[in-house]
Length: 244
Image 1 (cartoon, helix red, strand yellow):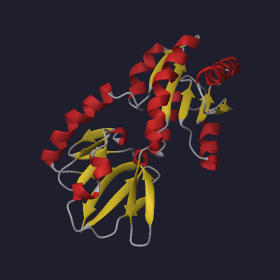
Image 2 (image 1 turned 30 degrees about the horizontal axis):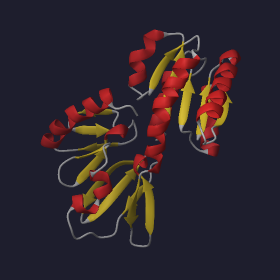
Image 3 (image 1 turned 90 degrees about the horizontal axis):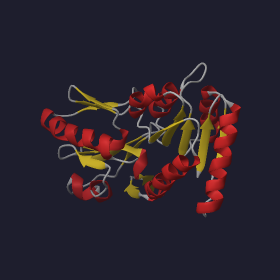
């Protein structure tokens, strides 16, 4: 697993690093690779070069780019790792949910609180990373992690899988129904059918407005009024009650 820690105060970075390594030694078999950053821009640059992280511990009040804006950029770029805020400013709690933050912990850092958060997060994170579907295209078969898929849509007997990295995978021509062709999506708790030819990943939806589903500032798709009205309460419930 890869963790990113971002805080402009070295003291808190050092404390958090030590706490996570202690947790790893006491409770995990899997190794945690930790990278530390003092500025949000450095974290974003690192992701561009070395790939995304599974977990982001972010301070909120930082110079140049704060933790809320940093997480917003992560989501807009398709990065869906768990965001955990460690901050001395409780007034940002509501804003943290808009970027699908997993938890919001107040400084000074409490080891027990961090342990508790990791205890609840890591099992679900591991399961999420392991779930996948196999898509047959015209040329090859490809393995897609379910958490990569924002939505899948049937058009002219071909299923288009829209991924959070901006790629689109096209299936081979299908003869049966859409639901029969995507059983892994239909059975997964993060996905919902939207009409008879589309499945959406609730985790990746950031806004629903005017019969349109927004997956970030870059990606959106219009749906029918009936499908929109049916999906919206499920998405709201998911946002409130889903752990990750």
